Length: 341
Image (tube, rainbow, N blue to C red):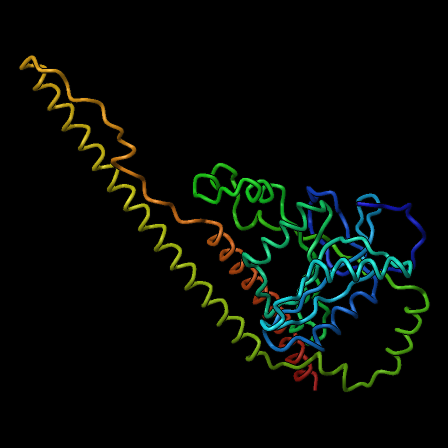
């Protein structure tokens, strides 16, 4: 990964932060405001409802800070476009950007989400591929639902070192995950984001804010919350059902394993008794047999899907908590205004 010497930068606006020290080569992400607008525009043009849009992030690494200076979207293609090669498309795009002297180094990718539904096996596999090839790679998650409510929702995630080791070994068995001591809370780490704008863009934003209408500002005080909360709870219940099915699979595996262990123990006891009787009669003992071939252990269910479901449930709960706390604040404020009037 190429890097450059740190240069002067304009005023910045802090977007998100995480507590504690991150165990990764990237401690902070600086993203150009133009890149944020491109991501939002990409979803508005091609995203519809729960449809996910994705794209490539370009930039450079400065010390422990990742600077994202440009991006371009993945084109939407159907099953009829069998000859479309995404890798070749990315290479041609980066080659074209290099020819016009624009940062063209691959530093990650971005994806939109629908009510926070982004913790999945597809995202895990994609981020592992990026992070395995380019250590500083990140994935930006853009939530258009939250953004439409008045606050930009853009978060950056990386796989933790523990999860990277698990994915390299591809050991998703219960014993492997237990040995690595990894849970859903140790799968992803959030990296703080800072949005950087030039002084001219900041001046333009101040000018546009002064020209904004009062009605648009009052929309942020809307007390209606039933649709958003209902959809979030519905998605949460669906994931809880999936978790219940995973628990049933694991319980079935545990019962089968316990039953087989009992059968194996009974078989060994019978052989010992029979050998003791043969020895008392002066007969040779029974020949040794391969117990593992006779009692093949049942295949344990993969636990990575369970971790992902637990992580998604936790994400839904956090979203509901944030949304309800904001609406409770609005309700208390509305109550105070009514009492004042």
